[in-house]
Image 1 (tube, rainbow, N blue to C red):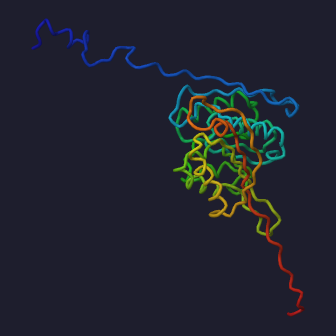
Image 2 (cartoon, rainbow, N blue to C red):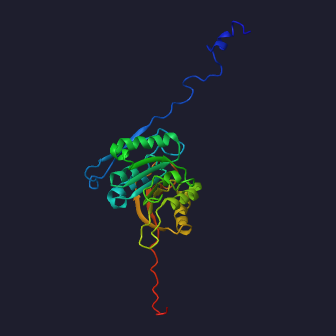
Image 3 (cartoon, rainbow, N blue to C red):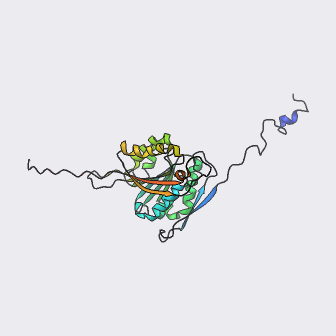
Length: 282
């Protein structure tokens, strides 16, 4: 039996193994960034700004609105035809700014994905509710799902309106994750619309926007594009090279490199012209 002197510890009045309430630092609070769209490119009836809620912190870097996402959002506003009446899939969306702009610019279906982590996925849903009219969400024009690159695509494919594939894929600041290039390329190959068998076009496009956050690894970033071409037969076209300033001033490496956003399009090559037999042989 415990002595009266020690009975308090047994009763919970004094617990040697319980950390003080302020032992751990508080979780960083969510933050909001407002993306101001260029007034020259904003279509009538759509918002002039997009409000993006960002998690206070996340190990998968989903708590930042990356410069590549902003540059690509502007690019989509200027070139609305890319998504108008098209099905759009974003991989690794984080705050989902390009997807939200796609929905504003007349995409027929927008599917927004990120790693199947509850906080990440729920935050995307919050951003959809904050920026997309309820009727569009209710009609399923915008959907949010967790998705791990390189794994079973069935759930995502079911959200497509055309044979399980999409017209436009968005990859915004993903290629820094070199160990995931193979998985990411497999998912692009599986989910991007293929050209029609009759050679009349119809192939999808993937838009890859990124910054070399670690300049000494820029070649490894670019390996993603090289492999897209050599292993999957995709044509790589440079679209944008835009200096925005670096995300983090104190990071090592050339600031000019860290502050430049690069944009590329991946597409299927045009079909080869069919040969016509002019020999007259039967």
